[in-house]
Image (cartoon, rainbow over the protein chains, first blue to last red):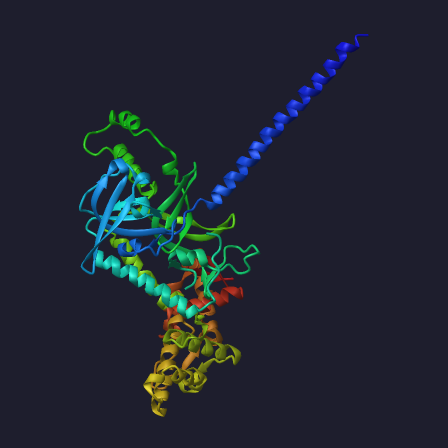
Length: 176
Length: 344
């Protein structure tokens, strides 16, 4: 009887049902994405193992960008406004400096002259050169540096030995 | 040896081979040929995730990084407000030693040992598991290590390669074939016991059974290569020594005994000695009729002294216990209570 009225009603209900379905779909999709993202994050969230390097090895440029390293040195200066700390170590009567980006480990109590251990990733910057973006910066003042060096070289020679004896038949490293 | 905890560097913990990685096994891992049950790692916390029931700490010891699942103990789960509870309990305090306050302090210390932040040193011991394609350590024990001058870490870095060189990187030797003195003694006693059983030997002289142990002696010179050739007499001496020790062990266990101690070393084999069995049975039967022992039964020591009086002075308690057990199995006697026996 009033054909003009029924038509818009029909289309509006269709419109409503479509929008409801779309809304539900968006929520479901969102959940799926979150779920996948969570899973991915869980799997990939562990950082790489930070291998011990001696301070003079860090600066020589042999290390790749993004590589996780661990090194040590005496804190010589700290610039909080630039989040930059400088560690120094003596080797073969030369002083070697390692620049550390302390953005992630602030605030920390800087004790100038104390020995520190830094764990972080290598970053190559234009002005500063090689920098270590610290994830961990621990004061270890009182550490026996020669003994620590000995331990590092001992560990290294052990792994070299193993590599030689095993040849190419290394064991499979699963996941990380 | 394979079931004990192993000091592991993480590189190996991450690399342990799982037999048939595509199949699910109940937690069996191997490093070279060593079966792994538990691992022990120490490293810096580089990742932390906290849930109601557990922590997941990512541990990095510079050779590798692995997640450690650390369950919270019940003490840590209940996060009481210390000020509130201190206020509640100090009213009833008797001055001096306040137990409640001390308990709260203890709980706080325990929490400190288990709550770690990034950069702190963690020691974890636990079994290796695979979860979501990743190796993980399910911690049975974990605690924060206070290491202000890196002494613990340095010691660990020096110790672990030694351990690997001496033990883990060597192929596992199953211990069944070893010729150590302890195991050859055990083999000797086993050989003798088998012989007695198979041939129903009642009594023997050491000389009669000496030759049974020859195979054990002839095997030994092969391992002692640095001592040179084993001459004849010393081989015989070794044999006599081994026999003497084996008979001593068997005597202590009660399997053999001297009925009469004389120059002539005649041993009697307890499980085969019918006379001894009869004597013990008679003693128990007669004494059980007496009023004194009718209800409770005869105590082992009473039976022992009776046997020593009537049968032989040299019967040991161990030998008697063997006899009593065997009589009980044959339903000749009954034990009324612990160490008491009566006739059936």
